[in-house]
Image (tube, rainbow, N blue to C red; front, side):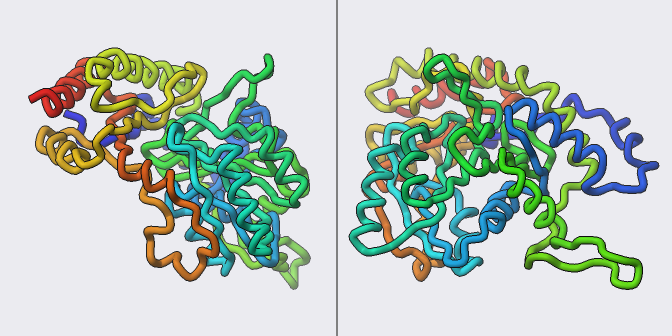
Length: 379
């Protein structure tokens, strides 16, 4: 059965891939990384792409590239810990924005509300990091106008939504095209829509940001002359991607549409068959076929049953997960949090559950998962 909510699919990766790099002099941040960047830019309709070693590094590089001396970042309370970790490590302050409990994401109303709280306390945020959740994505059109007026830079966290797009007013808006942001970050972790085993990428349309990201990726070292080999421009780290990871990424891109269609079939099966027990649960906002669904999320009507359901599924070798615990519930961030808006985030955390969704799943396995869930509620 499906022991994890997500899994990588490396079936089409051939051992011969190693032969492409074994005679290369450069095995990290070389020609295959550059080719991978070129393919991503073309796919996502961004001017530039910079690959790196993971999605967390992508967020950190993006924040460093914007160079805010007194970092105050608005981030969603429903969120993985990466953004909050980075802001804390950079000695910045965190403003936790609530989410819309129907989508799990920040919306225009929740964003306006958090800005009012900031103004009341004379807090001036300078970065907003919206999370595109589960494969869906935040409508940033109006939010971006407000951010521009308030000198707030937007860094889109697209780690769940590589390959997703929407059509708005007859225009195709792709996650990563940076239509309404300075940069977008992605993760290529094993369970993401495509994987490089570990890896990430940042997209942007700003040449100055792109050039700074290139420096930040590799200790910001610039070559000078033979007797003074390099100078360091900014404090940073090593965020380089190995060539073998880029090669895997290039192969994964070939299967992007196939992976997307397979996930959509599984979602359609879930939606069809779980409709029988809609008095117990509701799937999360799954109306857009253009979206590359990363997670299949259900909202339980009675959250007190969640723990028992997770244990029941586990006893039947079915993995489930919670995405995510609100950021304010992690005590380590307490000293950095200056505003905490959490009402809907608490509701979402209590009621949300992620069921298995990945490209190694079969429809037969999906039916077994559905039947076990029905057995749990109808026994």
